[in-house]
Picture 1 (cartoon, protein in one colour):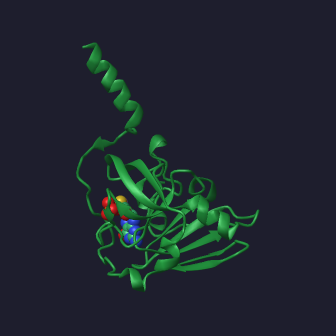
Picture 2 (spheres, rainbow, N blue to C red):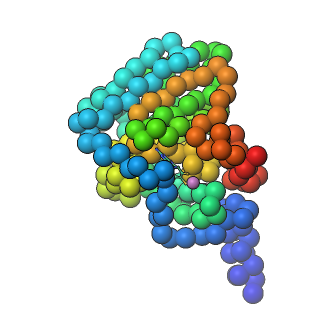
Amino acid sequence: MADDAASDKKNSSRLPPGQRLTTKFPILDLGIKPNIAPADWSLTVGGAVETPLTWNWADFMAQPQIETISDIHCVTTWSRYDNHWAGVSARHLLSLVRPRATARAVMLGSYDGYTTNVPLVRFDDEDVLLAHSWDGTPLSRDHGGPVRMVIPKLYLWKSAKWLRAITLMEQDAPGYWELRGYHDHGDPWTEERFR
Ligand SMILES: Nc1nc2c(c(=O)[nH]1)N[C@H]1C(S)=C(S)[C@@H](COP(=O)(O)O)O[C@H]1N2
Ligand SMILES: [Mo]
């Protein structure tokens, strides 16, 4: 049927190769699941920047807020469309800390000891945010609350949960899974799964 063909084509332009669509939201992590109350949470941003900063919860919530709707692509082959996120944009954060001209990559660090690296050009994107809400409710502990990174154009392992530190780097370096065989970059459209 022409309609089916049209919808298949639309689907294949939205679903990256090797992915299957789900409406569930699986939970995947190292299994530590830190329990951080907003009052105990803080974020430190430093490294190759002109103006390092630390935000507590009130500082973070006082920043300009954005809402986005984006798709999730997990390297374990599930994708989930239309996730509604709210939080602070990466671009706003970058405008405050001002990366040095020599900065190339970002290391995200989390309360469970997890790390993951992202090229600065992928972090500095309009749909990248530090999210505190998902589908209209505060982000659950399982999904990385109080604050997680959301980087829709890369596989989900790059979206660090329980975010506590962002370090700008002049040279790229591997994070937790990148040290264990995952791809350095992680673009779902070119299936940068493992190296
Ligand atoms: N802090 C932290 N962030 C993390 C992880 C982790 O173990 N710790 N796992 C990553 C991986 S491998 C995946 S697939 C996603 C899963 O996010 P979800 O549990 O919200 O689906 O979180 C990513 N962020
Ligand atoms: Mo993962």
